Image (cartoon, rainbow, N blue to C red):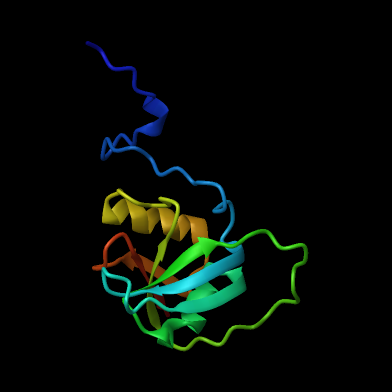
Length: 141
């Protein structure tokens, strides 16, 4: 039996499926509901609120909230875009992960490379593989 595989979805180097960007992740700038991702039972999960802005800026401003990672969920579309807020970084490193299967099940190197391109954050932010499950590490330079 021969399988019909769409070769455009395969990365030739790793022969793994290329990451697909699900709905809500078209841009790193938008409305985001953020929680901390705590222990596996969810006892230490906390709501950090709904924020508008770039994922990296929001993540660094919430870096002191605790937990293992910050969990980003695209929030419902809002009818307005607030004035640009200048977020104050509370930490130089933060681990982040996403909902809806965005970057789930991919190799850590592929995940870090893809999130780096998606964030398009410039030279002052490094995106590295994380030692936490399905997360990436953002490091402010």
